[in-house]
Image 1 (tube, one colour):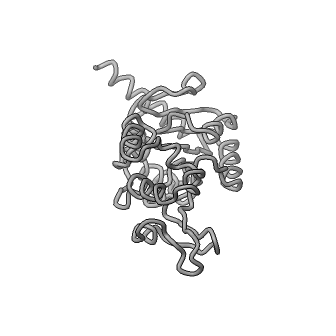
Image 2: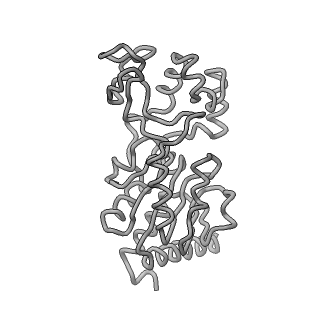
Length: 259
């Protein structure tokens, strides 16, 4: 127990040291960042089982372009019941990253999440690889709608202007990522001196492939479980992303504690 505690403290001190030396730090996060706000990971074993039991398909099918076009009513039922957390609040990870950005210590947040919690915490430079469920648009005329529009609709939401189907502005399985967001994410990672990757198993492509673009000084991986990239990282921490970032922020605020 004592050894694990010492190692945890050493890891935080190392991370704080890397951040102090970096003039360009970028954060790349996944579902694990938001699970600490009470948003379940639909790719987890529990999520897979629940989806099959209640909807007859795994999440990858329920959230696919094919099913959206073939059975939009089923798509929207699953989507509204499982991927929208209207009342979720930012956790320590979101808050610390926003604080670091405001202090000029963090240049960008790249996220695979669609919940908007980074922005809710105060982050401004957020690159949403998979879009945002706070934005919707009509497939017919392109008219934009807020999240509440589809939440208040029964069944399939239809555009008030043209009657077309309104869909979430998120990237479904079988759809490509937004080219401009990808280009901006690649550029941010290429220019970073320190890249912190947190709360992701690095199993979802093409997003996980972005790590190959990093050429900086230190790759830091923070995740509760091992990832395929652990062997390539300069620092690996298997712990809660929120706790690690909050502990590190405290160290940065108290230089004497790092001696």
